[in-house]
Length: 198
Image 1 (cartoon, one colour):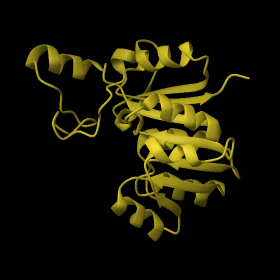
Image 2: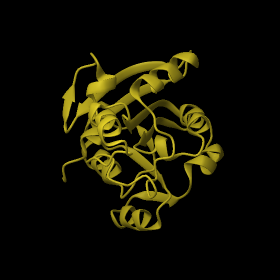
Image 3: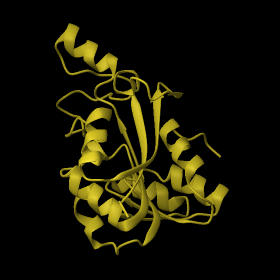
């Protein structure tokens, strides 16, 4: 098995065996394939990019081409144990609506995103005065798919305002896990496990 991207490895570690998942913005299906092969998960995927859909299907995965902003509304309520949105939230036109659908479709939802409040991003703006280009944010301001720049504290505030329950939270600095203390400035990437309030 190919090594998973660090945020996907965290998600894979916490998905229960034998469950049903929907991976929204699944890319080439790396996470789905790993979960199918190691945990016998019934995995489905939704992906916007046709090339990624073809790559996932060539792995024997059930992936359809679609847009999270539009197509998640078509999925029935609680039809999956987990709905997964990895590095896709910040590219959605209406991330609030996408999250609502994610929590409606899945009994629990994993959400991972790059933290735009990381110290390197802040320093780039402070000293260079330009939008940062980093390993995790490699595109320039005019060709980036990121249209909503979210920070860990923004996301925590968002879920608290909506009464969404945080079942787990993990933070990454580079490819290594880091603690929750000062995560908003020290973590480059965040992974949250959420569920709707009872």
